[in-house]
Image (cartoon, rainbow, N blue to C red):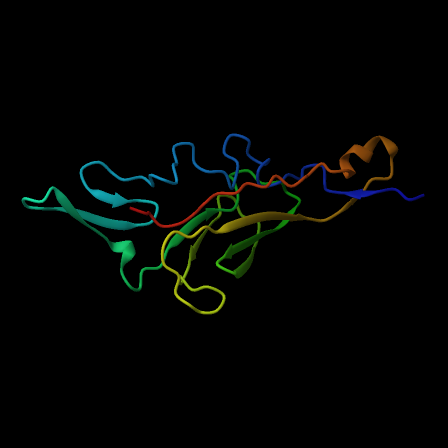
Amino acid sequence: CNWPFGPPPDGCTPYQCDPDNPIGTPYPDEDPDNPCPEDGSIIIAQTQALGQELEVAGTGLSLFYFSDRVLGYQPIISIPLTAANLPESLRRVHLTIEVQGQTFKETFPPQPNQDYRFIWDRKDSYGRTVLGHVSATVSIGYEYGLVYYAVPSEFRQSFNRLSDASITRPVGRRSR
């Protein structure tokens, strides 16, 4: 007979393993248009940038300085890969980052609470420096071995149980 193969019974996607804190979803208080300015100063926590506002006397205008706008600044994205509880059958974690025509791929062993810090050199696929707001697409995948399901009552385990749940999240520097 042609019995199907499928994921292991304990398998889950990055978005299903920890329902209270799914991997790859934005933090609940995160607003891409207002990336965590701290009270009392201009500190942008997500982009690790410092800023200052100076009023120009007698004009009603202000000058703004942000350290993420200087030559040599490299954006850093902190990407959570795994939750605290992982399935025992998880073999590897795959990460793909696509930004400005470039694709970066990494593979990681299955370890709980794993994060990856991606530092982008602000270059596109032609080597040109990119200025302004930029979005990146981050994909996280879990790799499992296949399980042979020989009993018809187990067929549900083999069909579309770990469907892809795509989440798009803009990541970029602060615009003013």
